[in-house]
Length: 391
Image (tube, rainbow, N blue to C red; front, side):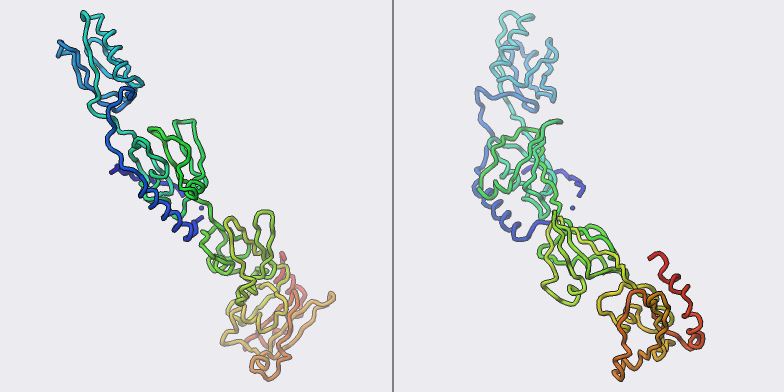
């Protein structure tokens, strides 16, 4: 079994669960077809390399004979000769070199070289696999078998952009999705020390603008606009939900979040990797002030009525006087003051009191202490400038 090492990878998009089932099935098929590999037999043309342990026998000279392991620099250390390069040669070639070199000290030396223990070539599989780490590179093994040995790809793997890194300068990009589809290994021969890197897919989506938590979110299979808005904490009271849109490549797809939140499935668009949703700020606003739980400014949507605005402001406090609600409206450069009995509208006695609001309306809900003074200061045009300053 390969020795695993712990690898910490920095990590944004999740692969579809259906795709993972296909990938897992392909991995099982690869493992089922993979032959078992034994220790390679000694071949006359076997090329020595770092990690090989060899027996060097100098016949008649036991003090000069050695069992040595070829060092990472490809050399072995021998008496009389010092450092001798062994890597890159066959055992026959190395024996000939040593015969020549020892010939300076011995008369007609006879030397043999045999492999006592073959090196174990290693490859590194990093990134989005179940068990990243170091694995044995057996003769004839392919990339798909190695990927299966590492437990297969995770659900965040981007198999279309796998990279083989060789040395410090060489990198080759592979599309393993094609290999899985054809059940064939890519036409790439791996070498000892190669790094097979499985990158993370970027399946994130972004929401910007008037939401409570703008940012990037992982895209889940089948996720829709309503899911993204919920993850972002909903829209703010300054949002223009009916003017929202999705940027998808060169497309701009309009989205009416108000319909989405009302349960309109057709308006609730299915999201795709890379989508960016924008919830713009409303240019039409109203203000709700006085004895309400959440006074402030709010986006004006089409057909919004007085009761809707009161709900956005969290409803009246227990001191609010709904029978004397006042609307300050700028109309044709003139400030108008409308007094409404919203209590009658809410009890169904007079629905005409539930007025349709206009851009810039200020709704004032008085309480028992301000009812007598409300008319005096609500008539001031400066109030409108104060509330809507900076709009």
